[in-house]
Length: 228
Image (cartoon, rainbow, N blue to C red):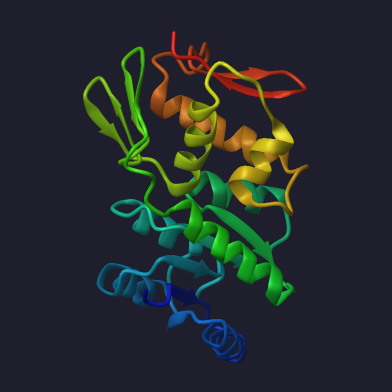
């Protein structure tokens, strides 16, 4: 099995060099880009398993890079940024990023985040069922959702949330449980992530996002997925 590929996008040469050394020491195949345009070129030609992206780039903004990649790819994107304001995190997640790590960071934590992002994007078990829910068809084996026969483009994190909820359809999935299953065991209180992603999913999957039928919030507790 080949080493997982990570594309590191940052314009700080010292940080990029240190990241590359540490990642290669932990059996990652690493490519680097110092600006947004190079990052988009490598994302298209090199096909990384995950992108590690700084928001402050010299040409394009990190948000532009996220939008450019999301226009055609579901590759996991982990933002690595010195920006610690909540609106920056929510903005990046809303744009299509899958995780957000602030500088300075612990290398072990970053490695765990990258592994989790790649794991969430891995192919599913081909023996899983196809679930029908109104005009939705959720194919757990092929990791895709159809709405009225048309495929809906989901990010890896959006898919991970759908998968957890659908596998537990009709049952309450607590907020902490959902966070830990999707983002990893280090999570449990970042409920803002869930609000952002469930809102995105409702816009994509529900006929009336303001009055959802399938992805339901149980206030103060968690979420349920209903097929009716």
